[in-house]
Image (cartoon, rainbow, N blue to C red; front, side, top):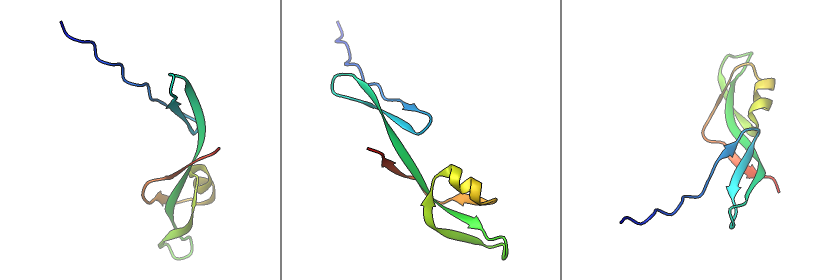
Length: 80
């Protein structure tokens, strides 16, 4: 007879920027997180792409700039 495989821990992500983690005893808790993106935007006067000197959340970038692109992966900060 075959041995039963050990169950894998349950990991999942929830929308609205919350991360689900598995605690020691199977308790699932959520921790808020902040995703900051490095990005570039098109300068309206020259039409050239400019790399931004700051990082921001996606909704803040889209509210401020009409034409933009993400550059690289987001930096994830856990809010404690």
